[in-house]
Every structure is written in C-alpha cells, then in structure tokens.
Image (cartoon, rainbow, N blue to C red; front, side, top):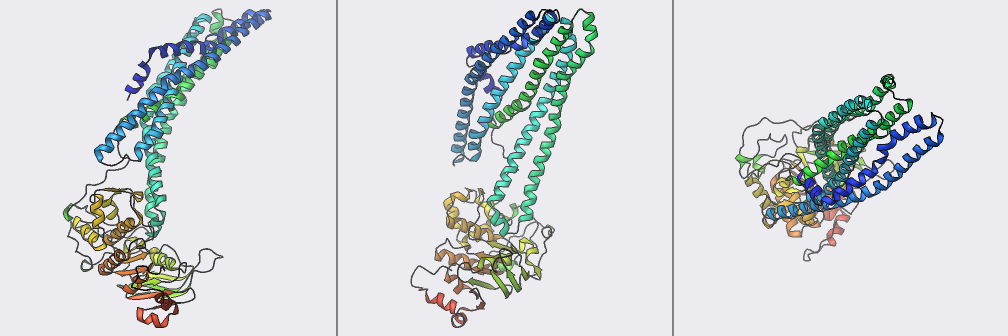
Length: 605
C-alpha cells in the first residue's frame, strides 16, 4: 500500500528540496513569534523603550509576510507531487478494471467506475493533506524547539515531555483508527447498496408485500453502520486526549513552573514568549497533525487499500450454482406450497427440515379461496372511489381474467387481492385471512414492469424459492425462457434490468413466479410486452401449474383462455364465461366486436 506513496515522493527529489525550502519560509513565524514577544516586552515596552518593542513586533510582522509567501509556494510544490500520484493511481485502476473485465468476459462493473471517480480523488486529496500537515508539523516543531532554546532552554523540560506523550498517544491510536475507518466505509457502502436496491425495487417489494422483510434487511445494514460509527467514535476520542496532553498540558506546566523560571533569571516577557510558542505554534501544529493524519491519513490508507487490493464483495459470497436437487440449500418448505401433483415436474425430495412459520405478523391460509365483500377503495380521502361495493368470490383453482377500459380499477383489484392495498370499506380475504395479513409465500403478484436485479440469472429465478436444476429447466420450458437462457450463456450469466428488453424481463419474472410456492398468482398485465404467442404460452403454463390464477388482461385473447371473465365497466361488474358475457355485457360485446381474430393486432384493455 505504501509503494505508490514512496514512488510519488521519490519521483523527483528536486521537488522535495523545493518543498523543504519553502516550508522553512512558511514556518518563519513559528521560529520568531515567542522570541519577538519576549524581546518586545522585556527589552522594549517594560524597559521604557517602545521603539525597541515596536521594532521586534515589526520583525514578527515581516516573518508573517515571509510565511504567507512561503505558504503559496508550498501549495504549488505539493500539487506538483500529488498530481502524478493521482495519474499513477488512475492508470492502475483502469488497467486492473480492464484486466478483470477481460478475464471475466464482460465489461467492468460499477465498482471500477466508483474507484476511478471516487477512490482515486479521495486518495489524491488525502495524500495532499497528509503531505501538508506532516511537513508543517515537522518544520514547526523544529522552529519552536530552536526558538525556545534561544529564549530559555529550561522551558523545554516543561514542554517537550507532555508534547511527545501526546504525539505518541495519537500515533499509537492510528492503526486501530484505520481499521475502524475502513469498517465504517465498507458498512456505508453496504448500506448505500442496500438502499439503492430497495428503492429501485419499490414497486415489486410492495407487490410481494415484502416491506417488512426489506425493511429488516435495510435496517440491519443501517444498524451495522451505526455500530461501526460508534466504534470509530470511541477510537477517535483518543485524538481529543492526545491534544489535551500534547497541546494543553504544556501550557499548565509553564504556568505552574513560572516561579521556577523567574528564579532562573527569566522575565515576564520570556514566560509570555514561551506561552506564545506553545499556544500559537506548537498546539496548532499538533492539532493539524491529529486532524490531518486522523482523517486524511486514515482515509488515504483506506482508499489505497480499496484501490490496490483485489475486489472483495461487501456481503457474503453467492452460493455455488446448484445443479441437482441434492445440491440445493437445505431450506424449510413453504407454508403455502403447491401440491406435488400441480407442479411440473414434481420437486425432487430433499433433506427433511422443519416447516417455518409465516412472516412476522402474517398468517398462513389453509386455501386461497378469495372473497371480497362490499369492497370500496379510493386513492385519497377526497378522491372518487375506483372500486365501490364490490362483491366477488374466486374459488381455489379458478382461472379468472379481468377486463375493462384502462383506468377502471383492474390493477387496483389485483393489488387488493395481493394485500398490497387495504380496502377503504368492506373486506378482502384469502382463505379466510385478511389479504393484507396473508403470508407472502401464499401469493405472488407480477406487475407490468417486471423487476430483474443485478446478479446471475439463477439468482433471479430462484429468488422466491430454492429449486433444483431440473425444476428450473422445467419452469423455463413451460414459460418460454429456455431460448433466452441459452442466449445469455446459461443460468450463471450475469443479468441486470438495463441489459434485458422489457419482454425478456417479463419472461424472467414469470419463470420466477412459476417456481414460487404461491398458490395464488396474479398477473397484472405481466405479459404485455410479449407477442401473442409467447403470452399464450406463459398463461397456459400458469393454468397447468395449478392453484388460482387471476389475469388482468392486456389483450382480449387472455379472456378467451380463462375459465371465467370479470368485466369492470366503472358502474357495475359482471362475471361469467365468454359466451355468457357476449349476451349479458354490452361492454364485453363491444370489445369483442372490435376484435378480429384474423389480424395480429388485438384491442388493448
């Protein structure tokens, strides 16, 4: 980790000589401040010679002018050292990212971008700060020691021991501080990543009623970061102690030792000069060192560590891709599983495990018969009801299609059935359990905008339930995902939302839902981006899967495949079969009248 720093410092020795020369000029006030104050008082104003006193103050003012000029040149010299250091780091980051991308067979990920845009800049700024404070501290200490030695050597006994103790205490705390700072930065990254993932998936989190689980997961990251912050704060408190010992204790010792100094021939001006050296030069230099190394030094070490070390994922590694039922993780069965007869093919038997209970605060239903009685819902206290006085029964095993004009409340009905929304009036129950209290494993809602998270295709497909390779292959064949999986390079291929088309994302989400244990499946225009043939294949796969299927139709053909059809027209609802509704529902008859099966285009509902 120290190699880039050493290389930057050794690149051009003339820059170091230039920096040292201007550092002498910058610290000129630290050399003369105490001496000028002492001589101005003792030899000037106290002795009745104000001209001498003002002359010494003029010397101090001249030293400040020299220091200001030196400070400007110091900034330029530091920049000349730091900018090549930044270029070296950036070159290393780019080369490493390209090497890893070439080895992995895909483009560099966001970590490489973050390192090039954040970590390198942090390292550059921290390196400049470290050079500045360490250089200033060293030259200031030398100047103060020389000034005190010229003023009254005896005072060094009162100043140097506590000052050295303060510096030593701070240096001893640096390794622990660096470790805690790294832990805090990693925890911060994990928290940011967890929050970004949750925000990006808000609709699907809500659709799956996974708010409690996601909140617990994000909360755990926040708690981890808070614990890391408290641990860092405890170590950081040592900086205050080191400042008290090294910067404040010498002042007390000088004041307490004033009688001794006076007995050694020192005057009042000498005592004030010694105090000026400590309070105006030595203590600020220690404060800058503690602040600079304690923050910038630790940040430099952590940033270089992140840049130069190989990628280490902030969370636990993903499990190896299972290929057989025997290799899949030993997880507890779902509290709402499909029967083995309704899955295609039947799951291979795995190791026995005790069943787990429903999610916290949720209830497992014995069946998924849905009952809506007197249901009303509006999106706000003063808004018109989207659904009003709805009574509906959906027996277990039913295949129901919901049709109606856009904005009539079809998606609202799906959200009420899934428990994502609570009715303003009436009740919605699934298996005798209020829908909003139903265990998430019993139902799955797929919205129109399908969610695919960054990870492997396997992780995306088995997110809701563990599955064997045979089960995943079967579900992919049923839904129509096999060709896409082969094109991507298999289930181990890395996928993300931006890398897939909307139709491809829907196929992934549909296969994921097909593999889930849910017995109630709600497709809210979940096939709208598929072509009619692919849509028919996916819906038929869910119909064969077993359980209850509710399809909020995007095309009229979805209704013709259903066992029953619910027509929503804003003032009333009608339910029945295709032939029955042609005669009983003018809206449905109108929709069918505008549909020509011979043309590829169908009316969008």
